[in-house]
Image (cartoon, rainbow, N blue to C red; front, side, top):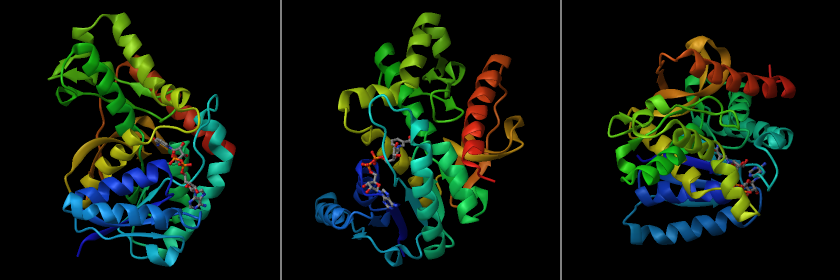
Length: 309
Ligand code: NAI
């Protein structure tokens, strides 16, 4: 039997992620939204593309949690997106209420599911969903690092004049303004960019990556990025569904790794059929560790602010 993947929120990111899953044919898809008609219309549209993609996925749109029951993975994108001038953190309170409600309903309908959180501020929402679901922490994770790393890869590839396929990049920490792009672990066919580019160039690439989301918001004016975010969700979901054991930067629960206890933060993790199967600990330099700690403190501050216990 095919796996069942529910996407909560049929907006830009949710619908794009649903499309990519359906297009690949790796699982059946349920698209859920509270706006009556939106998930039904988009799901029907995606279903009607499946013959052209050669996909046998079933795609259903709904506003009824009963249709999501027995899901293997639930991707949560429900919430408000950033408007120009708005930081991810401004979204905190509004989205916390939405994510708490969604998580409780999802956990009831699909007690064995894994949760992939997308709603911003994502690290905090992941912590909230873990608490609200009562699920094991290996089954609750957030998407942010895959996107940030893909942005970093793009900018490095353009600068080096090479295919993005030959660029690997790593971004650690929270998916916020304090994210920590890691030039030492960012390579063109194995060559660290610190050896390829001047210090100023590396700094500029890091800065553009940090502002990657805001750069797109400034262009769009009425919403935020969704193609690369949707593709990033798909990368994580695929690794779990196909048990690929990809090492992907993931917002994962840290229970002592990186010297941090009890908080979700972006770290390299192995994603497979068991969810977050392993957290990969890198030896960080003092400067890298300071950047990571600052980023984690920012996330912890928001968690405290919300009173998540
Ligand atoms: P969007 O506004 O296009 O879609 C959000 C959808 O959520 C809307 O259709 C809305 O009706 C729905 N929704 C609201 N409350 C709901 C509820 N209680 N139950 C079910 N659905 C509900 O927004 P977009 O662009 O899809 O972004 C979604 C979220 O993802 C935002 O918080 C955004 O900031 C975040 N995001 C996170 C990224 C990351 O890397 N983690 C990247 C891109 C976006």
